[in-house]
Amino acid sequence: MTNRANELDAAGEDIIHLGIGDPDMDTDESIRDALQLSLENGRTHYPPLAGEPALRSEIASHCSDFYKQDISPGQIIVFPGCQTALFATMQCLAEAGDEVILLQPTYATYPAVVAACGASIVYASLKPDDGFRLHIEELAALVTDKTRVILLNSPSNPSGVVFTRAELAALVRLCLENDIWLVSDEVYAALVYDGEFTSPLDIEGSEHNVVVLRSLSKSHAMSGWRLGWTISPVLLAESLAELSQPMLFGVSQFIQDAAISALRNTDKIVPVNRERLHRRRDVLCERLTQIPGFKVFHPAGGMFALVDISAFECDGETFANQLLDATGVSVVPGFAFGESVANCIRIGFCQETDQLIEAARRMQRFADTYFDKKRFQKKKRFQKNAWQQLSSRLVGTTSMLFDLVFPKSANDGLQCAAK
Ligand SMILES: Cc1ncc(COP(=O)(O)O)c(C=O)c1O
Image 1 (cartoon, rainbow, N blue to C red):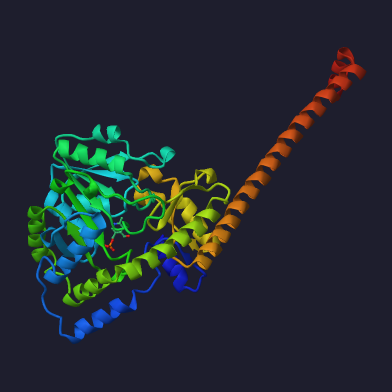
Image 2 (image 1 turned 180 degrees about the vertical axis):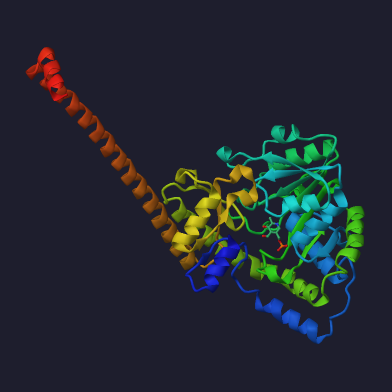
């Protein structure tokens, strides 16, 4: 869908891109300056595999503040983004014969990551009816002696759900009791608008079996820089660093130097980005909820709103294609995140508010046209039915009158005459 939108854009169509999860904000100048300085200082050589010691220390200190607990540099391994951190983690934790539980709706890349390590996927479908909440009994019923990892994402892409402390405490307990790793993708941890963010790391006992994945992509508007990390028990961190050798040979020194600057400027950068996205979420969701046929799952965090479009009597893919053709608004069909949300579309709010307002206006017109057409067709069907009823009544009345005027015997006679 995004490719088709890009092609239409390149062909000169007026496209509004609400499919991608890439903040439109530029990376802060202080970070770009740090990169420049690093290059001038000749920081262009092979880096240590686990990450530059200075960056690992900076991340450990940043995360100790964020999670309000002691996190040591030895628990941190630097990767090019959260996605690579996830890939490496799954390679270390699961293999053929193991089962990995994914919560559906699930981030689109997860199934391929699990497939790449040879493990089987078991889906735990979170229900749209109760806002995709986590019910531990349902999850527990899927656990077998082969279950090796449960992969969590909060705030969730695509649902925008932020799991509560109670949900996560039950999940951590389930994992501890069954010797399961809990991998927590927290790429949107700094982008929570309603309520509080809680990580499984905040739950007692989690230091044994939880791996957290973070990056600067969303919080610091640095998606193209490719800088993320894992927080894990030290033993696993050592395996991750070993894997980094055949897989990556480390992350560019100058990117890591810029990342130190990004983390040191967090208080200046992140609140501004979060406030901007918060406002965009409010502007978009307020308008989406007014569109007929749109059932919006209000996102508490992240960059996306998931919308159930079943009222349009088609699946999310058909809807997204027709919406793109008719209005130039590009969104992602729900099936990219699993069967359970195939009747949904995901709408991003990474663009400026005027773009979001214009996109909502186009979607409103699209929905109005659809329902006007439906009403017209219904009216036409009603008129047709009414006419059929009227004409059959007319035929009945005419034949009654005919029978009255021409009694049966005369009628027979007339028919005979007609022959
Ligand atoms: C849930 C989730 N995890 C991971 C990623 C990838 O993040 P990164 O850019 O840090 O690799 C994304 C990107 O959109 C995401 O939405």
